[in-house]
Image (cartoon, rainbow, N blue to C red):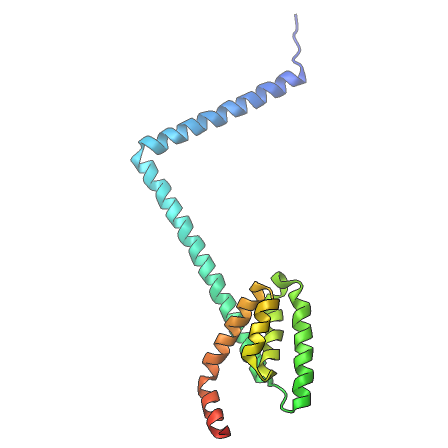
Length: 169
C-alpha cells in the first residue's frame, strides 16, 4: 500500500517545524539571557557598541552638514552682493522668489533654499525684520539651516564688520 502525501500536508508539516524551531530558539535565547552572566555581558557590550557607532555616525553627519553650510556661506560672500539700491532690490526679489520656490520641497532643497534666503537677507535693509517674516513663513528645516548660516556669517564677519562700520561713521 503506497501512500502519497498531499502537498498541503507537506506544507503544513514544514511550517509547523519552522514555527517550533523558532519558538525553541526564543525559549533558549530567553533562558541564556536570564541565567548566563557572560551572555548578558556580551549582549550589553554589543548594545553599547551599536549605540556608540550610531552616535559617531550622527555626529559625523552633523559635522559634514556644518562644513557644507559654512562652505556655501563663504562662497556666497566671495561672490559678493550688489552695491546700488536698484540692483539690491532686483537681487533681493530674485533670491527671495527662488528661495520660496525651493522651500516648496524643503526636505530635499533645504540648503539651496536657505542659501537663497540668506543672500536675500544680506541685501535687505532690515535683516532682523526679515528674519521675523521668515520665521512665520519658511519651513522649520530651512529656517534652522538659515539660522546656522547667519550665525556662521556673524562669527566670520566680526573682525571685518567692526572695521568697516568704524570707517562708515
